[in-house]
Image (cartoon, rainbow, N blue to C red; front, side, top):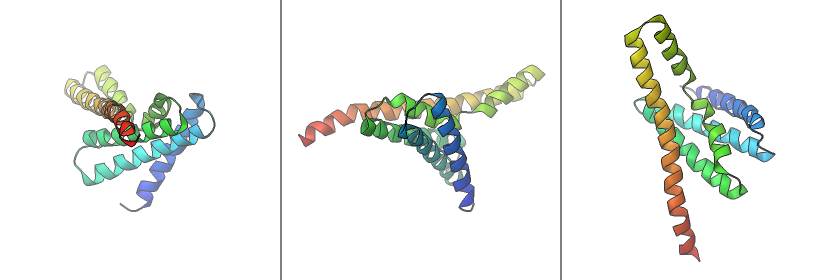
Length: 150
């Protein structure tokens, strides 16, 4: 893959999430922060897919990167983490997997339905566990790090 294969998808993720940031009523620079989080998450996902095996693990790593980024930006700006996290995770949501799962279900393709369903659940679970794990670990560690500085 060349550089444009990484840059352009990250740019589209950035632009899409800036639009969603406006829909979610995120104010000012926060919209750009959400877009940067989406671009970062998509970049991590693309790098992991190309250098590691499996898109589910890549989604997990990307969700962790977005989680760390969102926690840091929320603390810097003194805003809730959920706005940054939800918007930045949007490009990774398995919409195609959901679509094809329902399509195979309606068409009666049981084997394709079940395999696509399990893959989509795995992908979505990787996103949620990655974001939740990162948030939990950072919320447990950050107060202890602050006490060490004072």
